Each structure stands twice: as structure tokens, then as C-alpha cells.
Image (cartoon, rainbow over all chains, first blue to last red; front, side, top):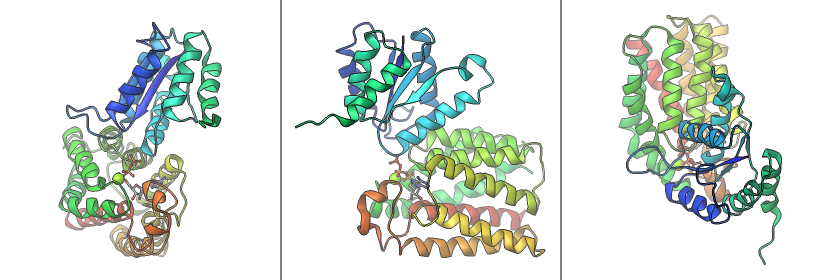
Length: 141
Length: 205
Ligand SMILES: Nc1ncnc2c1ncn2[C@@H]1O[C@H](COP(=O)(O)OP(=O)(O)OP(=O)(O)O)[C@@H](O)[C@H]1O
Ligand SMILES: [Mg+2]
């Protein structure tokens, strides 16, 4: 199984994209995790590498260590996701260090839906990553 | 050396310039740079131990805290810079001129690893890289840490002026294209304030 983490500056966007993806991925509630906004009560707009790192660990556990694909929005969404990946790779905890995690080069909404469909169909990490990235070239008109 | 006191000097300077930095970010960004950094450095002072003498330990803690509390691009950028500098200074309790250069080099490499920018893209690097070069030139000619930092601060301020003349090609300001010309970069400004605060701290120590 493959987990998915949704990263956005906005808590609402991350939660909303997750809701949308879950509509096509029944039973994946614990494997698709939103990591949007800062970790405070106001859900301040911003990105938090630590919060993203915790989401990756949880999604990977729920997916029986099958790995995690991240969908992220703009600017620091990408940088914080990359920071989280690097922190895991430098972790003293072998379980964390060995998590297979990839950041998708894809639009967040379309990418998350495509990734979720592939994941629920049993796709492995590589397949889910490819599905997410296939959304990049889809023409809308 | 209790890095806490130096971080406190940085925090005070950032908070004193919170509105100014946010205003600069309003012109070419999303009006949050001063707010972001003030939030981050306030949290840093809550996390870093006042008595810790190992500079690496304090800087690592500061970097981790910035990663999760700043919120904007400056979070992973400053966070990574502090954490990379921490690696160089781990186990050291006194700052000398050569170690500070090594820490600056590590910080710059961290910012570039994270943000993939080079000089001339209207970012914090346009202040920090010239500051590093001016600092290196001074201390290699025999100057001490403080004289080196004075040269660094001057070069960083020149770098901020230079950012007014160029187009942003990284970060939010890049969405403005040509319209970013004429405005100074918020991150170049905050990193210059950071260097000034370090200099103030060392002078008054
Ligand atoms: N790729 C980069 N490399 C180096 N510095 C950068 C880069 N992107 C942005 N910056 C610096 O960060 C500053 C903006 O910091 P701020 O905290 O306001 O982030 P932001 O742009 O609001 O972040 P976000 O990407 O979350 O919208 C810029 O003024 C610039 O100096
Ligand atoms: Mg901003």
C-alpha cells in the first residue's frame, strides 16, 4: 500500500483536497493525511516541515511501510516538504530513516485525485507517483 | 558562549523591524515576512536553553524551531542555514574568526540546497554572499571577528540596495516579473539585520 500526504499553506486547502481525493479512495482515511497550515490554534497560513514529517510517518505506518507520495502547493510548500524528507533521511531512528518517500512534481488537486485512485487500486509507490505526475500534462479544455 | 544571548539580540532586532519587513513584503510578496520571522524568533527564545554553551546544540535547536514556526519560505531557508551552521560549530563553545567563516559558508550552502537560487535572483543570498566575501577578505588579511563582521554588514547593506535594481526570479516576488524592480528584497533586508544583530552582540559581549 502507498500513503499520500497533502501539503498546503492553507489548512483548508489541504483538508479539502484530502476530502476530494477520499471520495475516490474509500477506506484510505488513515493513509491520506493532510498537513496544511501551521500547527497552532489559528491554523495560520504557512508550512511546517515538522508537521509534514509527522504526517509522512503516520501515512507510511498506515500503509504498512509501503512508502508515501507527497503532493504540495507553491513556494515553501515544496521547500518544507523537501526539508521533511531530508530530516527523515538523517533520522537516528531506522524506521524513519528507511521510509520511502517521494515528492510529486504535480498540481496538488488533480495530482492528489489521480494518486488516490492509483493507491486504492493497489499501486505501489512508483505507480502512485507516476499517476500523480501524469496529472501535470492533462489538458482541461 | 551562550548563543541564546545572540539569538535574543537577533530576535529583538527582527521584532523591532517587524512592520518594516512586512511592508517590504507587501510591495513584492504576500505581506508576511516580518510577521513570519517575529513568530519564529519568539519561538526560538522559548526553545533554546539560556545556559547552553555548545554553539552547535543551540543553533540546531534554533534551526529546528524556525523550520516549524516561521511558515513562509524564510522558515526552511533560515532553518536550514542555522542547522548547517550548527553542524560546523558542534562541540565549540567560543567563536573565532575562522569558525564563523566556516559557519557562514555552511549556512549559504544550506540556503542554496534548499532554495536552489544563486546570486542575482533578488533573494537573501544577494546580501549574505557579498557579506561572506567581504568578511573572508578582511579576516584573511588578518582582521579579527568584529572587524570582519563590520565589513560584512556594510557589504550586506550594499547588497540590499542592489536588490532594488534587479528582477526577482525566485520566490513569490518572481510572480511580479519586471514590477519587482525598484523594491528591496525583504529576505535580503532581514538577513542584513541578522548580521547587524550578531555584530552588536559581539561588540557588547
Ligand atoms: N528560493 C529562494 N532562495 C533564497 N531565498 C529565497 C527563495 N525564495 C524566497 N527567498 C527569500 O525569502 C523571502 C520571503 O520570505 P517569506 O517568509 O516572506 O516567505 P514567502 O515568500 O511568503 O513564502 P511562501 O513560499 O510560503 O509564500 C524573500 O524576500 C527572499 O529573500
Ligand atoms: Mg512572504
